[in-house]
Length: 310
Image (cartoon, rainbow, N blue to C red):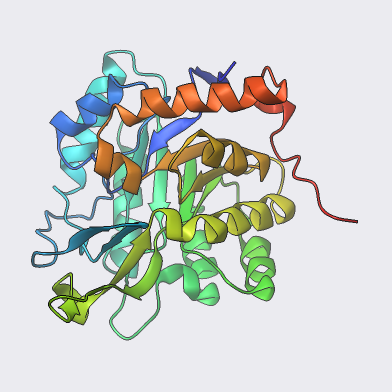
């Protein structure tokens, strides 16, 4: 009932972790690989090890979470070695997430992956801070276009991009026009909603230390924004570009809505952080229940078939 196909690989279900959650170490990645998730993605890797921002940098809230992690990770080699080792052992589909701290580092990271024996999917995270004083790469349309143009002069393996949320129809139009120029495997939408603020009323202070308490929002807060981005890009992107929906997945109904908006796969972040890898068993069961209630026997029965009011 939940089986789906991605790059000619059959997956047991459309669920994955969101990069950044339960994927920092090989132990956590092993737990994902043996969980009920259909696939997994590694922690977004930079060239070198990064400790990340000072603690506290993550806080669970009633309706989700707020974080300013600062890209803690073990460096590209750590994750690249892991996925190559699994590939040699027969793993058929893996997602390796990367981002550079500069334009040149982005190119260098992707060249290293291209030259390696890794044959899986690369997730190029365009929704991380880049140059100080500049917006995230994906909020700079000219820079995004320039970067992708250079990437595709040498990169020939499957690659997708992870995007921040957009809030203006004109921005959906402009970004889709850029993305459609390139042979992307997929678009992952959305990363956390940037620069929220959460206050501990008793202490009259913020709950995370970095950036004066400003951080990315995840969880239930962001589902309407995530669904809007999935829907907007599914309507605008070439059919050959798949969509991974991320944001606000608490239960099976949320997964159903992402797929209804056009998502091929769905990632889970905050809820995975709160519940651990057992969450995938619960979510797949709940999704099956929703589908049975509606009389659907496969994901293709309703994927992308959101109705509008005429």
